[in-house]
Length: 305
Ligand code: RIB
Image (cartoon, rainbow, N blue to C red; front, side, top):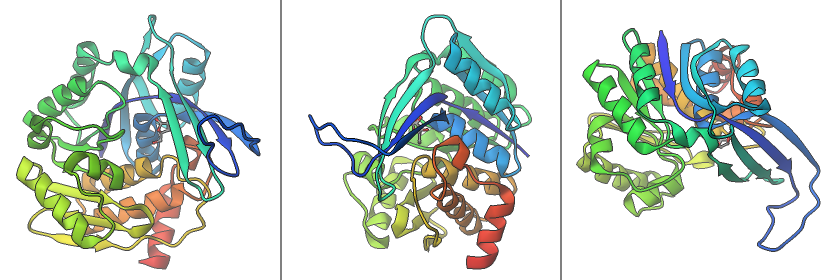
């Protein structure tokens, strides 16, 4: 089962702090880590750890962060042969604070990620012929993501689109992708409803259906996940875990969902895979290191359903 991920790759500099700083405030933190991240990269590594054959298409700068990140990601069984080294821009960087409640605040310097364009789309197209799923996020230019989504649609490759970070989207996106997976704040930016419960999520999903997307999955973190593909609607309760760091939990969710969809699992089961993958990611520090392995996901689902 093959998954192509077209997206961002960053180095994450993550500080663990008692609380997120206010504007103008200087705080003492407890510790920091420097680990690979980027929404595309996290999704790629998580999908590989969950058992997929993963091809990653992205861009790094010609610098030490790019070299370090690629070495680590390649060791995770992600095929990085289609990650270009960009001479013009530096590797993407994310500066992250995580507080005692596992909440985070992230600043992304896109660097080479924002140079993704036609050349990258062409390389990605070459990888799609035997792919089951294409995973997209929008830490790279939306136009490039949309172009590869349209190609995937023509080739009958399922497209899972994570509208993160949040931005309003043209209708063409909804008409092209198969799945859209916003979290609460992304849902609010897309449709003007901040969902707190199943009913509000259902209302938001109805608007997204009207715009043309069939499968809507609304990630509400500790409140659970609502899914709605018109024929089937449902709600998945959150898994109970000891959360210490929520960075990249959404990326892990999308990878769990993608692997299950690529394996032909029904939507209700695939959403559970996403929820379990996301929950496991919150139990470890950092982005890439926190991504879930298949054995622990299956164990959590056996224990909690
Ligand atoms: O989704 C988490 C990711 O967002 C981090 O790894 C960081 O790089 C930012 O892209």
